[in-house]
Image (tube, rainbow, N blue to C red; front, side, top):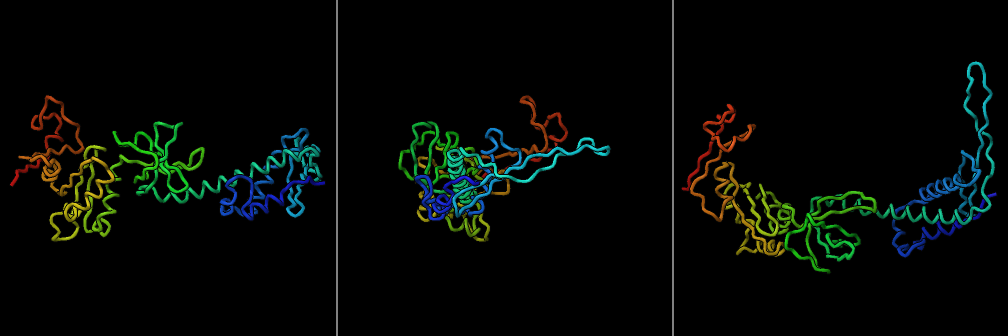
Length: 336
C-alpha cells in the first residue's frame, strides 16, 4: 500500500504560488510544468528508496496526486537457467510488488521539499541566464552594493540580479560608493556553481565605444565609425574615427558635438579621464601623426616588419640580416 505524502499540497501550493520558501509568490512564474515536477519528485524518491536497507535494485515510484500518496514498486532479479549455448544467462526481472518502506514518511517529505526547491532555483537561474546571455558586450546601468565579505570586488545590482565588478576590471583610483548608480560594460555571462555569473567592467575600452553610441546618432546610423580605441583607464583614451559618407569633414566633430556637448556627456561617466578624438587614415604615417596629438609630429617614418622577426638593438633596417626585413616598406610623412 502506498505511503501518504503531502504531494497534493505541494502541487497546489506550486500552482497558486504559495509553495515553501519566502520567495514562493515569485516562483509561481518560474515556468515549471507539473509533469517535470512529478518526474523529478519520483526520481528523488526512488533514489531515497535505494538508500534504505534491503532495497531492491530495480524500482520505480508511482505518484497519486489526488490522494497525496506514493507507492514504490520493486522488482527482484531471477537468475536464468544456464544452457550449453548460454552458460551465463542474464537474470530476468520478476513481477512488481509494493515495497514502500513503512518509516519512509519523514525522509520522503524532506526529499520532496529539497527537490521542489532545487527545481525552482534552477528555473530562476535559467531565467536570469537567458535574460543576460544576450547582454554580453552591451552597456547596462546598475547600483553599487557593498559586501563586507568581499572587499576586493564590487557588486552591482542590476534589477534583481547582482553582477560582479572584479578588481581587474576596475579603474585605478575610482571609488564606488554604496547606492551610486554607474554604467558598466558586460564582459561575460556564464553558468557558475552558485548560479549565473555576470562579470562587468569599468576599464574595458569597449565601454567608451558604447557610451559614445548613446550620445552620437551618426555612430548608430553608420555615417561615422570608430576604427580604433586605445585606453589607459582613469588617465586617457584615444579614439580614431572615420566618416563613411562623402563630404563629412572633420570626422571627429561628430563625436565632439556642438560645443563639445557629446564628448562631455561621455566624460561625465568616466570621471577625470581625458578623451582625445583623432581622424583615422589608411596611411599609417598620417594615422600615427594624428594619434600623437596633442603633440605636434614633425615627421613620421613607418617601417613595415610584417612576417619578420624584429632586428636586434644593434642592427638597423638597412643592415638587417634577414632578407625579408630588408624589403620592408617605409612610409614618410612631413607636415604640410
